[in-house]
Length: 113
Ligand code: AMP
Ligand code: ZN
Image (cartoon, rainbow, N blue to C red; front, side, top):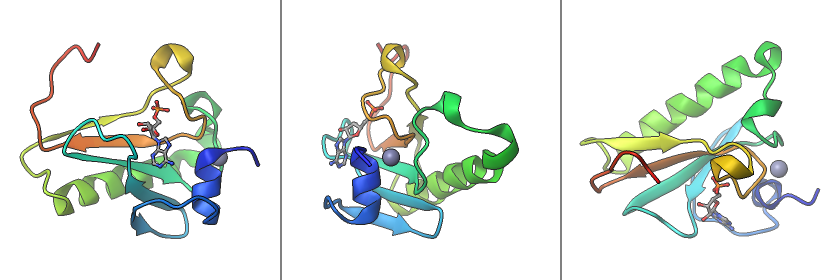
């Protein structure tokens, strides 16, 4: 599988892991855009938001969001944080294995640019 995040899931590429269970993995972003910046990904390969199945993946998507919520609390983002999922090139996606960005510990602005 030629996917960077599948390789992280498989342990073939190192990552600064924060949390792991049978469905998801969370790790610090290698190029943080905020003092706190981590990613929550499903362990199974799903390329983009478009490739999620409403029938099969609804519980997984909910789980990703609640893991993000809990870890944001644990990693000092109680005052506020941002979650982002980029979709496809135009949406700014560079790694085609879905991931929720969680960014915190600095003032966010809108629009994001
Ligand atoms: P996106 O542009 O939304 O696809 O986000 C991909 C994110 O993955 C970027 O924020 C990268 O900094 C991050 N990233 C790329 N390679 C790694 C890696 N080996 N470990 C952790 N994060 C990574
Ligand atoms: Zn993958």
